Length: 266
Image (cartoon, rainbow, N blue to C red; front, side, top):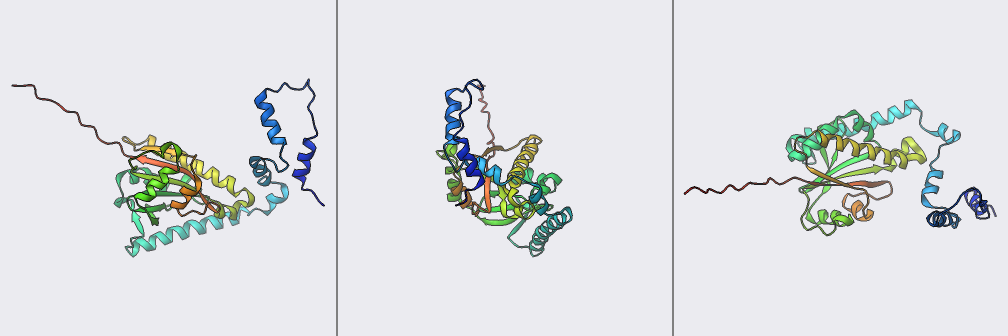
């Protein structure tokens, strides 16, 4: 019976006792170490890192620069052409930023033609939910494409997936979802697809913060990365494997406050 290399290494690790003069371990460190060495299968993070490491052989199996450019150009062109055709037909499945709420336009319009964002929208998708629909940002186009219907029940489900907001009674004005597209990323990155998708999601979140910082009256934007995945993936039509939400952004528009001035004359 053959034993996988990583399991064999772990079996050997379990027989090793570090010399007492090497390091003094506190209880927390001992607990973490024994938990790690106690499983032949290893922890998820370690196995993920091992399985997604590049070697010289796997590097040579990745797409060459010319193929990468061809694939990226094909996706960007196809996405843009599809949006353009819908707009030409005056279809309700596409919407210009001129026709969306102000906060959506102010937040997403600067992103759609940002070269950094466009380059990330192969490995990730940017979705926004407001009013009665869920929309997708189309790279290099000043508008959105319909992704699915939306309603108050879906808003409540999205909120319930974020533990710190699950007890909130009022609904937010909208949501922004940063979605890792693993299957699309795998065309270029192979086993490193999840790394690439996660990196793209982080870059997109950073670009959202940059836009918000430049707005004179920005909406309140609270990003959550700890949430109940299946609830969020369900409302965004993601399967959680080939395509999964990485960030849930909760958006609230500050309500104007009115100062009451009493007339004390007379």
